Image (cartoon, rainbow, N blue to C red; front, top):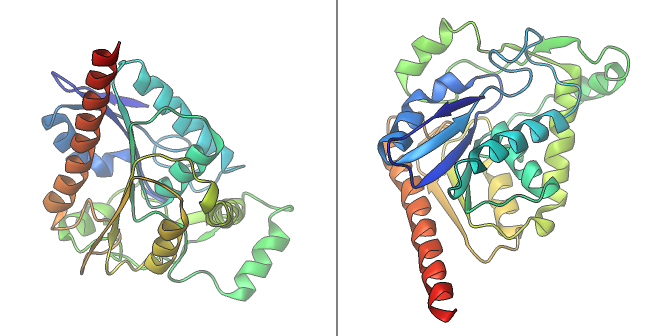
Length: 272
């Protein structure tokens, strides 16, 4: 877990990275939140980044849920409003955490949340993974993700190529747990807790199926939700060349929720 503090913070952002990567790929986004007056809590999820030598493997998706819950609990130690921001698989893990745990959050931002895949493994691979899962769950196979399909930002193309923490192989168990988590999130959409929500989605996402994201978004019964799709942007909207505009949208969402929170507190105080 990492704690990045602003000099005068008005809230805390809990940032959850996606699959096959690590928290350092979000240095730019972290700096923008800090410059805007927000503490940031983040880290590497189990089986990712520097968290373990067994990269690409988990025993259960619950490990992600428990880790995110710890980060949120740490964020509350600042006694400030807390926002959860999850990208891709981190977005899926954030959804599952919200569904499983009773969390006090002022708002949630999901960036291209992984509730469906553009190119899921073929039927043969799927059947094989079911057979291998109880026998050799830690067996790792090539993820077969094409290079540079996450972002059009050439800076990241060069960085990722030489980054030893980027994962190229995932375990059979990890794959089965991912599919199970997607199914639970999709089937449980109508039971999603009533939290203020912003979804930012790349219009040309080549990893997460944006139609699945739209379907999930339309089914969650929230009174305060917004969907923002960015034409031409790839999967990693916060790393794309247009990331400044995406960040401003996310920051505006957070600031609006803080204003609403202050207004409610003022009304409650006046009514005492």
